Length: 414
Image 1 (spheres, rainbow, N blue to C red):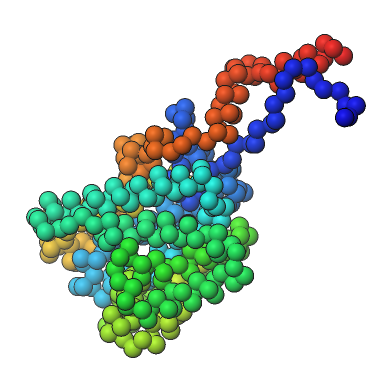
Image 2 (cartoon, helix red, strand yellow; image 1 turned 180 degrees about the horizontal axis):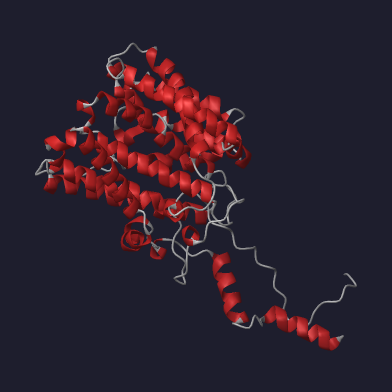
């Protein structure tokens, strides 16, 4: 027995503090209808810190990357008639998805198998994959008059491969935290994938494996690494680097298969000797990393007019495909005026405007049922969260709960 005094009445063990949600996937709406993590104001100096306010730099980078993605998709039907446009397409494709994936990896550093984070992974990634992997084939079946288009959850169509990849990558985060040399190991996996055509197309595993090093690199990065590439000297260096990249892209148009940038085929499937696959994997990783660093150097770190749109980039990513494919199915890209310089500029501007609108709050509210469903009915309640909610109700609006009453009684006894 101890001689320490005990407070009167029944005592409870303190509840664990509420855990912040994991970053990297959309957060569910607050059960009270308040703002989620993606709706909080952007503030600097909180890079990569789970549970704190968003960093404007990362939202800016995500928005600019998703604009480049939409522009690149709008160039696909037009680039065959313009060597300049195809060279620009090659340069953009060498870094826009790597940049997006690196950020996804960076904000996945805190991911573990905690129930709340697994719930968010299911509702924010797995469920949207099922929804859009069903919606896209149905859209093609009716818009393209293709009655033979099938729905298959094993064969990602168009944009949905990224959701499969993100789901797999995030589940493997504990593994990359465990091994001693995660990035070399991920590069080795990607190199082996380029010489293994038998992997097949199920779940687009070639892309999952070949883009894996960028995600693992994001896991290994720290906030100071991003600050390093955002220095003024790096911004200056980025100008000649991008100029050289554009020149090389123009030169490579008739000499290089653009399919290498998609990371969806093995070397043998591209008509190259097997040994070219690992060499290209390393070479493209180096080039993509250099251009991604230059891209990050140009991303503003302060709050801009488009900063808030960075929270809705997954909406813009998944929804803009309907516009691009719809225009393609309707034959709009076949118009001769769009295959001239002014037409290509107009298409580029229209794609950037469309994806910007798709990232806005009104669009998020309309499509939140598919992108961030609550699905409380599908999961068992968290006992700790229920206890915290019960304690908040007992305390009431004035904050007077059992703990406060015990404190007041102790003061009286004193």
